[in-house]
Image 1 (cartoon, one colour):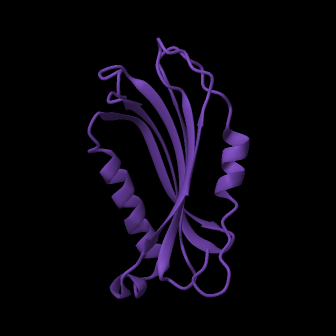
Image 2 (cartoon, helix red, strand yellow; image 1 turned 120 degrees about the horizontal axis):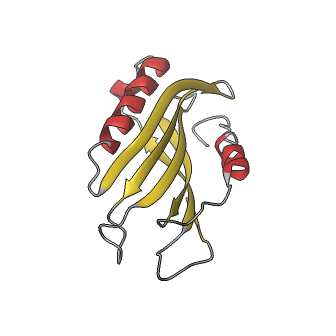
Length: 148
């Protein structure tokens, strides 16, 4: 599930947008047997390492930590990037501020990733989306079975 909002645009400067999304990743039987905290630490290292090799992206800062969210084993990841690959503006640094949580379902059959972020062109001030974004990240609830 993806929610995107285009904010007031200045066509000369480039796109200014907000994104929020949720997706699930099914786990193999082998991964289901790993301790949830250990598995989420592995997933956090994987995400942080993968971001370091993204094409057209330069990481300004990144922070990851293992957390418990509503009783679920999770990790929190916050990063700031410069994106040099925006279509129509290649080579120009657009700032992306991204916030994510990823949690293992109690069934251990899948993980759920929720994230929100904002991309702004150079010399454009971001809008404050932290209140809505943080509420979004804290809103994950699992029901019985494997439903999220």
